[in-house]
Length: 366
Image (cartoon, rainbow, N blue to C red; front, side, top):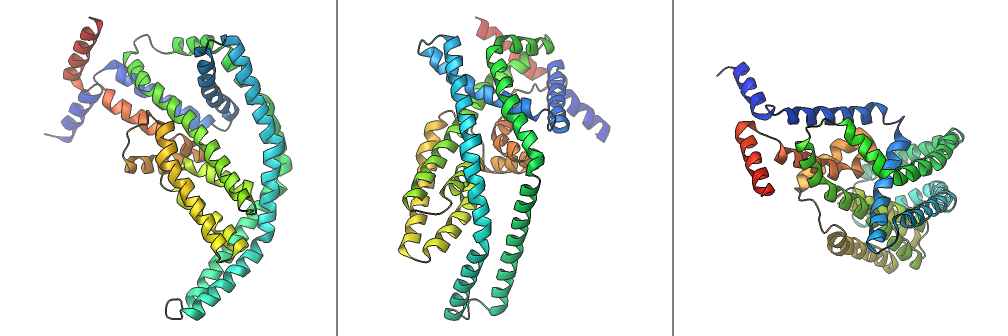
């Protein structure tokens, strides 16, 4: 069998269905729009995601016999209040703590160097002076680069003020109209699709509940884990509690890796503030308990309909989509991986698969 015939048979096996070709073209067009116009349409995409999350709260209130218009007003007012609180209370606090941390970083580096010197004196065979110098030089370079990045951000902050104002004004307006005119906008988007869209419907039905469960569950997980971390760090009187809590909260976005990465700044700040004392060990122990509760209690409760993906698939999705779209890619890595999985299982494969789908539809209709 020649290569040409093999490719022809492969194309006939996977692309003999017209709906499959249309679905592939629609997905490619959607990815192209996000990649090439993502920066320009970022406020719209942000508002679309927020509206999708808030719609779940509206549906919950409607199921409790609250009128839909009143549920929308209550949820929207709560969203605007949370947005204003974050913009005028949380962000200034985080920025102040970040600046203080950068200013105190040289003292932390000196303290770490003194600790390493003592460790090298106690265990000269384990750590050589050359290794110690390499570690200190690497830490100094990383600290210098981090300080330069923070300084660059602060110098360019005047130009970013306009962008922040645009988000604070435009995103709430878009969210309001996306919630208010949800049915009309959904019908308009559906009318743009081809009339023959059975495959799209099957993939969407399989994905709808899972995507909604993941996005809303992940947002709730960030708030709960970040809030619990802030209470814990404040109880230990740990400096930069709000900044560390935000880092810990957003670390849940990256499965298997985020918790380990967030441990580094927590351990560094606790070690500098408490030294190698029992208090330092108590902080790490409490942080470990928090991560254990998150992984073994909170995640199973929030993601009762969690997607069934292999850990290797999740890590590959995080690396791939995070490399393309940054933070948003990391956030949507698992839903996108689930979409690909749903397409693989629903994708028609030659005439035999079409006959199986037709038989299933006949049985369902009966």
